[in-house]
Image 1 (cartoon, rainbow, N blue to C red):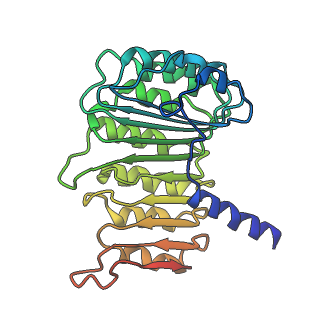
Image 2: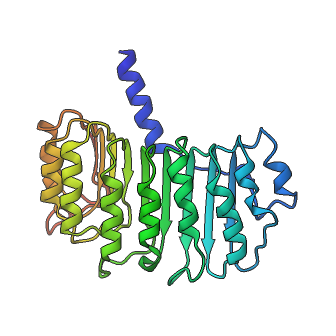
Length: 289
């Protein structure tokens, strides 16, 4: 009974946790280098945009107590500040939860942001949680994929594309990024919300579902019309670890039959899905199995 309760508590934590920075390096008027030496500060938010200049941004690397970092890069960022910050991040070994938001349109120019992320993911075995948010497909690069792939400890991954349109085409690098992340054997939570997933991505996800023994939660919300629910459902039918599955695309009835096939599945969230021409599922189907 205790084992079952612990598993339920872990699932609840996976689905509800949010990052709320205690120290915002943009809003704070106090020298953050001193604050980063304060062991009571464990969560930091760093936001780079046109009007933002952060002194000694590299001091994040000297911190040994910061556990959560939210890093946001907006249009008009200051490349010098970003470079100092990521060079500091490269030597950090304390961060457990890393949120990276890239809201820059077009390429990143001469900013070698992702090259500096490689040693961080390569050497920081404490980092188990990654959330990556982006708007423009052009910012996905081989160096970013290489950085994420270098981690041996990531178990909770959220990769969310914001403002995607169902008419957009998924790029080859986006497909490679998705394939790289879902191939990780130790994944416990995966959210692909907003990413356009085509047939190739559907096949990769189905293969991962058939082979994983650790994944507890999978979200495929807003993943476009090209995702193949038949292929995903086949993968889920062979899975014995996923307890929560969320989907709001076409043909949601493909997943309703899983109740009698996948006994590990505890919650099937098909919110906002359409069921045939009459949309009989409507806005709120969430089934506790």
